[in-house]
Image 1: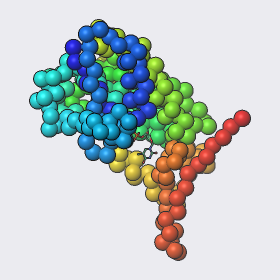
Image 2: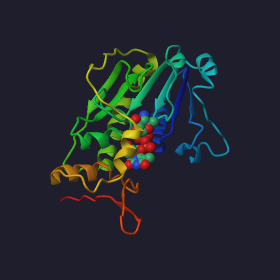
Image 3: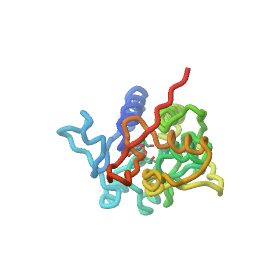
Amino acid sequence: MRVLVISDNVIQYNKVKGIINRINPQGVCFDFKHSPDSSPLANHEDFIGRPATVDVNKEVGMLIKSYDLIISLHCFQFFPEALVENVRCVNIHPGYNPVNRGWYPQVFAILYNLDIGATIHEMDAKLDNGPIIAREKVEKYSFDTSLSLYDRVLEKEIELFEKHFSDIINNSYSTFPPEKNGNFFSKKDFNNLCEVDLTRTGTFSEFYDYLRAMSHGTYQNLFFIDEKTGVKVKLKLEVSYE
Ligand code: 0FX
């Protein structure tokens, strides 16, 4: 059996590779690849001098021929219908489907007070949409920023992956369909939030949620342009608690 793991996320790649190496199922050969364009994994020590990119659109024929299972582990590329219909493809998603399909789920979970968690599902032609193998919620606190909540979601992903690893490899799980009502958030939705509208009115609580939803470690998401000087003012929120 041949399994391909495609990832563009260093943290999850390291952890999943660790689980795979430790369990090392008999008779299963694992390949690890990343996306061709600006993947953070390109600079990982495993891939330096050993390029391993895959374009899921251009190489769909090769993928169908070569693999029995493809695991999308925070892969930046959208899998084409021809691929998901001809190879079993499993996605590990940092959101609780179908509540937060799409990009940066924890950001929108804080902003709109939605449930959040992790989901492992079979892929279909829609993004983050197929039959669910496993999903679980994580706690969301008033003192979370995007980063602290994201870290909790990533831990949950790994916990679910480890728990269901053998079933995923052996195709011995049962699935259930996602509920009909959900949400989809795009990268554009996120980008639209980055410029702060200083004329917006609301409660302090709404602004607090907006600021912490957009604050994620060293990322500099929020800004406004100072009217007088044209200077770009960058802001983020730091939250600490006892
Ligand atoms: O790998 P990932 O955590 O996940 C993203 C999508 O959220 C996910 O739905 C998709 N399946 C996957 C392929 O890509 O993304 P990331 O490592 O680029 O970003 C992690 C977090 O960092 C994100 O949730 C929010 C934060 N972030 C990221 C960027 C690039 C920011 O706050 N600002 C940014 O500019």
